[in-house]
Image (cartoon, rainbow, N blue to C red; front, top):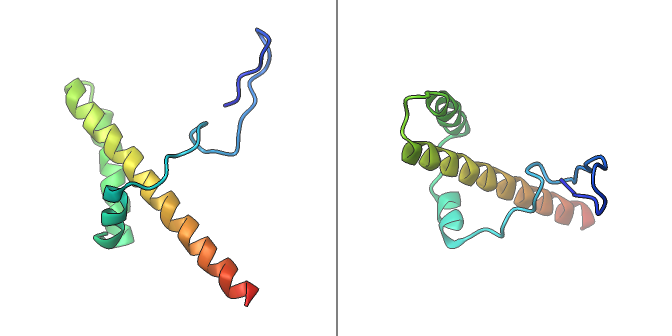
Length: 94
């Protein structure tokens, strides 16, 4: 989301899905790329995280851990798609 300089102006949305650029992959992200589950398992874990996060009785600490996991997973998926796109562009360029 891009904020305008004047008050009460409409909000402009950027290309980023989260409204802000994702940080570059960290060392832990690169380790996660090497030790990934199958895609269907990762998606099931992510869906289960949504269900667990929706529980109002869950403590704030657990909610933060779940949401951090979900952001890390989305960052990992985004980085993997970016790497695949770069490889495809290199193959097409040759």
